[in-house]
Length: 141
Image 1 (cartoon, rainbow, N blue to C red):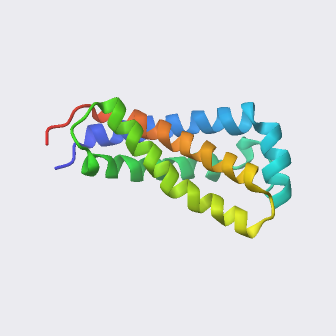
Image 2 (spheres, rainbow, N blue to C red; image 1 turned 180 degrees about the vertical axis):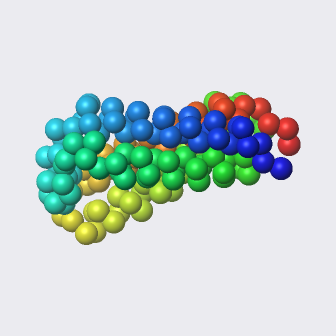
């Protein structure tokens, strides 16, 4: 039976973690690099985050909902930090690599920008997984 309180708290934690890391990486720390090496060559508009509410709310929320639902099904009994981080890194790579490959095949942007996008996305999802694991804590098998 699902613990609704833990599920909802983990969705919130995953959403916040993903959003904060995405903002830090893509809008602050590596903004100029991403605009020059990724967004401009692909033609993806680089508008302020506030003009794209679907990207800044719906996408991270849907990722957090899916992750919070899946996490307890794969829990192996270890430390919440290790379990959550392992879960987040794996999901980040499982979804980030095909995402990066799509851009690599569709646009001639080079290996560096594609690798950066994969790594940024994996870090964002890993953070969500870590926080989801911490919310769930140690679960009884």
